[in-house]
Amino acid sequence: MRNAIILVFGVLMVSVAMTQPAHAYLDPGTGSYVFQVIAGAFFMIAVAVTTFKNVIINLFRRIFGKGGEQKKARRRDA
Amino acid sequence: MAIDGEEISSSFRDPSGFVFTRSGRIMRAIAEGYKKDFDLLVDSGLYEELVSKGLLVKHREKMESLPRGIYKIIKPDQIPFISYPYEWCFSQRKDAALLTLKIARIALKHGMVLKDASAYNIQFNGSSAVFIDTLSFEKYKEGQPWVAYRQFCQHFLAPLALAVYCDERLLRMMRIFTDGIPLDFASNLLPLRARMNPSLYVHIFLHAAAQKKYADRTQATGASAKFSLKMFEGMIQNLESIVSTLRLPATKTEWGDYYNNTNYRQSARKKKENIVERMIKEVGPKTVWDLGANDGTYSRLASRLGIETIAFDIDPVAVDKGYIETKGTDEKILFLIQDLTNPSPSRGWAEEERTSLSSRGPADLLLALALIHHLTISNNIPFHKIAEYFSKLGKYLIIEFVPKNDSKVQKLLATREDIFLSYNEEDFARSFEKYFKILEKEKVAGSKRIIYLMRSKSYKK
Image (cartoon, rainbow over the protein chains, first blue to last red):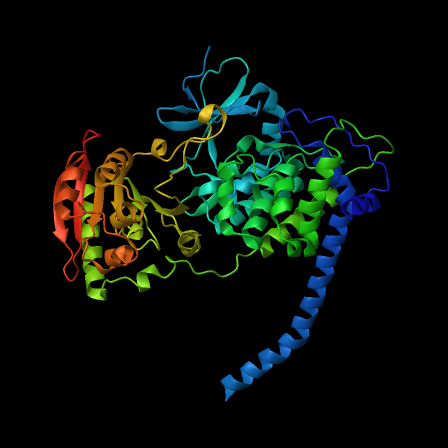
């Protein structure tokens, strides 16, 4: 199942520029390097989903939040 | 011409520079080869932004003649006590992870990237996490994936996920896996329900599978694809999102409610605090280590006086609670996990990359309150062995003798044979006098316990 998902994401055969920046002394790991390119689309979708979710939550807050504030103001006036 | 200073055993992997000590102060040498990246760190405004937000340790340049191959020598603000990820509680590891990602995100805005994401790049100044590796930044080249992604997942994401989905104690495994938990290992340990979280599934399980699949390949072939800046930013944001949501299930340990369940009446507890505070002021230490600190009640007697205090305890719940309460305050206190019967040893290359607990001392003053009976009775460690070890750990000692007729000791003996024939105050004092000079003692009125103040014979006054 896992391999199938990797294949689905990685339909493109990838070639990653393996030239290391001058001071990147750390071994990134071939698999980790390649994997990021494969999963790149997922990261962008995840951000879009989170952004959309936050927009909806803020919308609901604005709609129902206003009603709550008015009720609190009435209690103070009384 | 050599550098005036002494090398540090842990600083050798990164050719951009190295850390050394001079008159007991930490210094950093920057190699000529790192000149461009270091200048970009400053010129891009990244250094200024990170330092002004308290995220990166500040430094000052030292004006001195430099040996060939060295571009600059800088002196960073000193960290009072070096601690290691395997000594941190869950919240400390989580905050260190979020700090790393925040810095990575800010660096990208300035056209730079973090070239490593090691948990050892973070230290705690009091209870504030700070990034200490000024040479961790390099110019960002669009299209390149994050070279530190594997390290971030191994040092932070996998351990945090293991703590949440399996057991918090798995965080201690960093003592064995010094470069973080291998992802295939984490995949094997994590339960099925961890796979239900899409982000964890990608960053740990699929990531581990990709590591295995591409392990022996040096270069994949075919059409090229790039890792764009948007993908990079998306990945950082996704990692921040998943780390933020990781929370330990609420647990109670035997020590979590300790101070609500002691046999001290409120008045006796207050008297004990007064005695300990008076003794701390008499010694006038610069550093205090509270051994078996629990919720830090007595540690904070020292930290409130402005003394650098480390509160050690075996219980991760107590340490986490103490850290959360003091996080973001100016109090000079750091809560850490430590099992005194198995303290942090030297680790890493040549057994000296990460240093043992005792080599990070001695503390000016040790507190060992409500502790001795746990070491002697629960762990069968005789008085003289405790005295010997404590005499090396600290110059002064405030220690509480808990007699056998104390209800807490009776509880420890309830389910075992009492073989502790020499567990009495006389033998306690005699054993400690081999390694300490007893300066004074005072009984805590309203209890059966006695507080001693001693000076170690291992250190000159």
